[in-house]
Length: 264
Image (cartoon, rainbow, N blue to C red; front, side, top):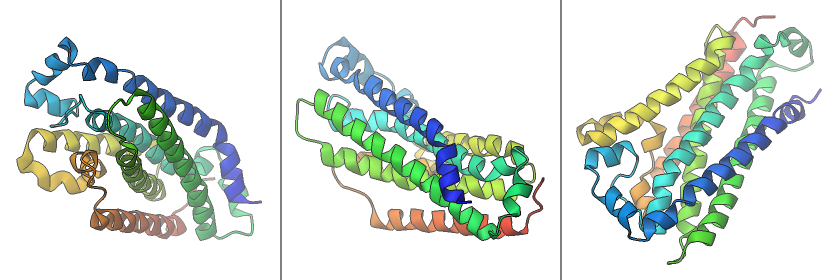
């Protein structure tokens, strides 16, 4: 039995649904760009909003009349959706054996627990890479269709690449929670709650710069939207740290999964 292929097959329908929803999110979100970039009453109303409300909406200091600034605004919601997919996938792909009472069948195969985790992690990685690729393709296509100014394809690609690092963090964190949490049925809820907490921290630090020390707890703040919108690219240090954090979560998943009592 090939666990890797088994998991790919099991998640192919949900992946297709997520890909369609992500493409529709990007299309519907970018459809509002014309109204904001025209310089009419809509864009003026947004410009007159208090800075606090702008921060809550994820606008920051972006110039949403430009394509790069508007995409930076839209990207927060794209990244949240991708994060939800990743963290639920990570917790679900590991916990579903206990939830579905198939643990005994899986453990009787000539596979170590480490091999099982690695196979499931590999299948999950394929899922998030595919979703990321669909997001990139949809973003480039829609941005190209609406953009009337300078080409921002490079900035869009950097945004989506940064999202891949965030997806990796949430994926491996979800798997770690599933490996540690005693009740496999609630690991998904716990994972979603942790993602929500990360978003709340994002909002708090946007509203109060004095709380920026908390940014380390929210992957949504690891990469600067402002820098990416201006074409500054990704920080190699943050990218490397994100990979190391994901690797640490993956190692922790293997360590705790090998030691836990599995429900049958």
